[in-house]
Image (cartoon, rainbow, N blue to C red; front, top):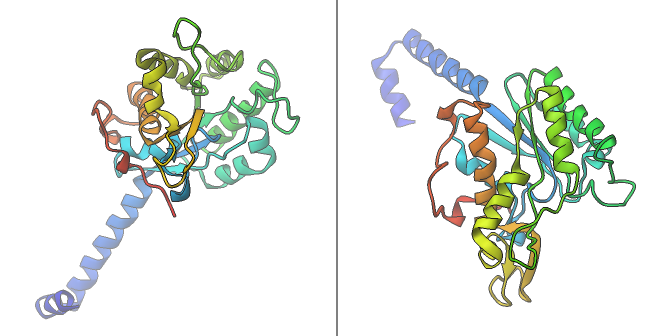
Length: 272
């Protein structure tokens, strides 16, 4: 209030009104130029609260690699497939909000593989049909869809090599991306390469492996070969952000920290 009073004593009323108008236009301009990245996916990408920390999804970690010009809207939901996400109305919610210039990241496969009829899709038919609903829906709103193949689980063969775990689903998504001219983040391939480089023991720094007593949220410990703790979520988010940068899905200036190593787990935000 004291600053405002000082200005009032120095400026005419017309000048104050003019200054306020300039600020208002600047705020509107900033709001208009913010790009939103919507994330449609499953538990590997979703947001976890403080009661689940250090568990985190890669969508939750994605803002670590974008600037303030980008707003990540993580609407990934645990346990959903490309089918159930649509059937429950989550895609409809995104399409009601998404607008021209926004990005829609589409990543399913973990739960499409299940035999549950509410979840299951066939990679060559219904999986592609449901994914097409996301692609076509985003384009109809002037937004840019990006297909993201499912991140690989932590699986190793007897020789210590990381092995694939999603069958025909990643290939089906690659085919759809080519057929529809949609940008593709091949997270299945890049995560498999990362797991191979880290090895069976090293990957435990990424996946939700905790000893008893290590975390108050997991007092008995946990061994999870599908979901990530903070470090893993950050590294998988990097694998998503880097192709978005390299393919020009967003301007290079909208990214940060893509090559910065040893990022702190505390950069992730766990909502209450």
